[in-house]
Image 1 (cartoon, helix red, strand yellow):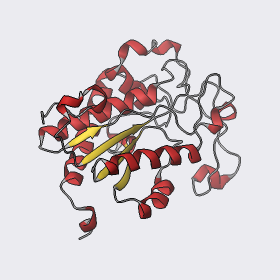
Image 2: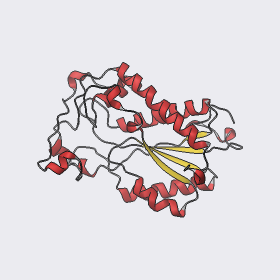
Image 3: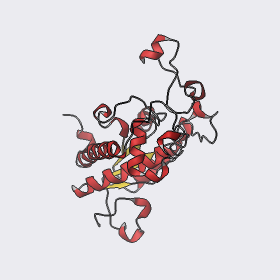
Image 4: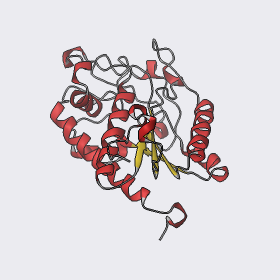
Length: 254
């Protein structure tokens, strides 16, 4: 098996007939507005690019990992009043994940990492339900939590903010409009204190929360910040993939 064959979608059958992989990576994003200056596919572009680079780094260390084609739709029930939002309900995600994991198990891939790039997706409960009836080991990684973002960015936020804008400036600069076109990403706070403090939760109705669909001011973003963060994130995930691939899931705890 050539060490370059770590992206399933661009690899021919001739290169895979005798291949064996320890870890499959399933990028999962969303299709939604990202402020006024980033494309609707931002989550997919970021997550696919991070998956590919993390796999490249892990492969260079001897890990046997393969990146699956990305799932481009996420849970966007709170954004459906925003034009062209595409929603995939959690129950649909569960059905897709069950079919994908069954296929991977059939092909003797022992581990699957869902690489999540959208805050509205949460695969933990799905894994809890699926794992008891599957042999394949399932886990999920939110790439935007892999390293401390405060070491790279000045402005807080969680959607089309300084971090995401910097990332896109680095990996897909032609898709980013000039920052003068961006909204300021200001959001309205909940009236109820428990929601503001984060120990109570309800889905955010985005049109009532943000006037530009952003959450966090993107205007201090730079490609250099994005490059530093991208390298740190992919290095952390590559290390995780390498370690996971060489660890027996039945012997995960010391």
